[in-house]
Image 1 (tube, rainbow, N blue to C red):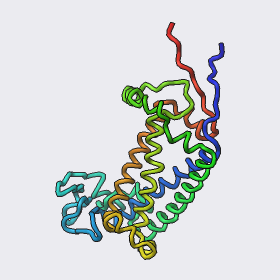
Image 2: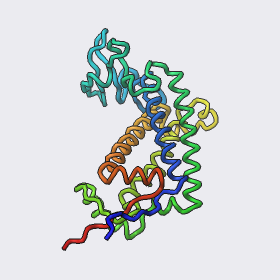
Image 3: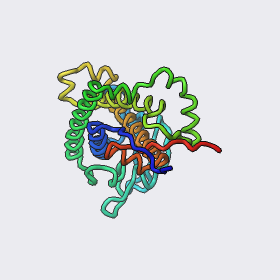
Image 4: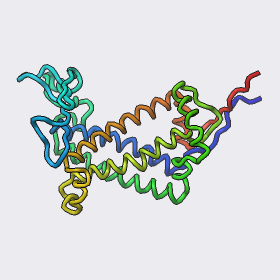
Length: 268
């Protein structure tokens, strides 16, 4: 009896191209976004920022910065070595996020904004193509919308994930994957785009109601930052699941489209 697992075609070419383009676009959006955030490393609500008492902030203490901190709702937490203070050019420098995770590395708001806006439009166009293909081909419904019977097994799926026991013999997404992707693709990402547009003076002139819908430009900035953090968390969990469920097989599926389906071993 052959031990070679049969291959099934799991990811069509448009899905694979959209996935890898999103990997590049979201990475550059994150790094350039942190560069923009560093120009004013604080979050607030409303139309204008409260510089004395922000909702949250990253900063440093001392004229020669030696201790970084994160402040949330008036409560301050030490963050020396990563946030608030980092070494750049051999000297301790006050900056929200360190140079190695921003684009560009040096503090350059104008260049960071150019990178961010360029890849924001690339990401937006890629999303439109993905949605158009997904709707016309039925892939969006099959991949993201769980059926009634699948929703009935959500408890079992949660237990499987908590115990790191993932069923074999399946080529499709489980109910937790579908619900997660549904929230991200049709919830978080559109809201993130709208929050970004609400911060654009040019777009605000065209649609002044948009920043008002978020409660002001600073509120939109806070929403934009929080969703970015949730997307980073999603990526970490996604990568962890890839590593736990067979990285070679998962990568082959997203590169070539073909996925190996291994049946569960029968107990004797």
